Image 1 (tube, rainbow, N blue to C red):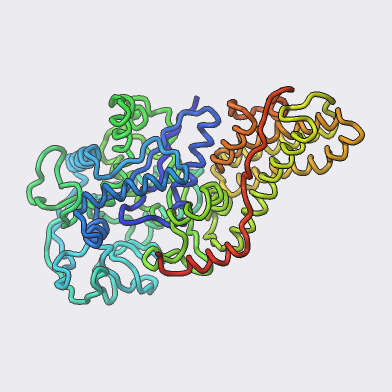
Image 2: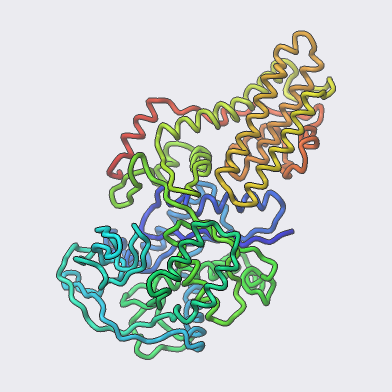
Length: 572
């Protein structure tokens, strides 16, 4: 049994995420986790809420709540929505957990002992209007590299270049919009990433199987301009993990906290500790996933994230792990995604433009969204959500190809043979052709899933559904029944087994529909098929079944038009 550690980018705490956030990390990670579990592998799938930094403070202030209370409530909200989308985390943790406090301070101490942290007296932007130092991301201005006028003080989202606030042209406070800014002196800690450049370069060069998107972004940060720069890991904020050197106080760092981009990735590890505590496990139970000296040497670790997170997971977090000198598990594969755009523009949290996760579940069940998002995942380039495309995909793929197949087969069998698998007839050449095509299609589907080629996997799965429809059309048991009821019984027996086969192999994509179809087939056996021949005889003669409720309904033109209007602008 192979062992797989899977993490998806941890969503920020300051609000409910839109569908672009979902398809950029959590949903494809869940697809992969479900697939590996279905194949019999041991999986640890971890995620958490990212709770530190200025955005959390500002969101809490806007809500009129203490920041810790706000974060606790929003974690519960995000957890409920994750359940709604059937995200099968083994644990959904919090970066504000005691485990992450201890581990972040531990890493800082190890890095300091290794000479990889330096103290810097620096000039930082202070907003007189806001009465506070401004974190990098809360200073906006024009990017000196590409001219984008909404670049942040830490990074330009347009060209991904790493920036310092003082690099920006015409800077302003992102909180108040004020240009009444001044530079004041303050002390901070920097991670000496530049000292780790050689090790990071060697490590990245060894990952020959990574997606081009991942390696190109990492190498750009390593080599562009002056190369990899040292990175500030502390901030002048109230909310966060207090700066300590292990368990000891850090002179001169009183009142400061670790930068959210330092502590957030460490939460991946801490989350396993939270899982152990929540489930009555021991330290050894979680360390076997993360410590190569305690059992993690045989673990394959895969991360899922949007392209904007790639630099931190290919450089900063690995620098932290490598620099600690301890045997922590490093990521083996990073699956990165481009952006999902919305109906001719971009999803916008601030403008309420696009569909947010809670709203999506209000209008349709999770499987509708899961199928469309995964089958249109922005892997090789940005992709775009349009309501016309969504309606067409749901109606054709889910309702017509899969749902209609299950409905036609079970209703016909009930009317002619009753609600059990009928006896009679012997499979012939047409069934042999079907079996061979299913074996070939299943191998293709599995190959794409193993390689985490999500759109190709979705296409391969749909092609397997189509094979059943083509068989049903060719065999035409409703016509055969009039002349040869025995052969018709064999054809329907084959088709009933196809329903179970589809339920099992489709479960990573559409878990609720798969469970519904397995229940209708009265099948508790959800074992992944090894070959089509055995799968087509899994339900034996006399096995009872029920006609399922409508598996997928069609989206009407009226619904599509009303949703398109509803989600075109301001969020309710």
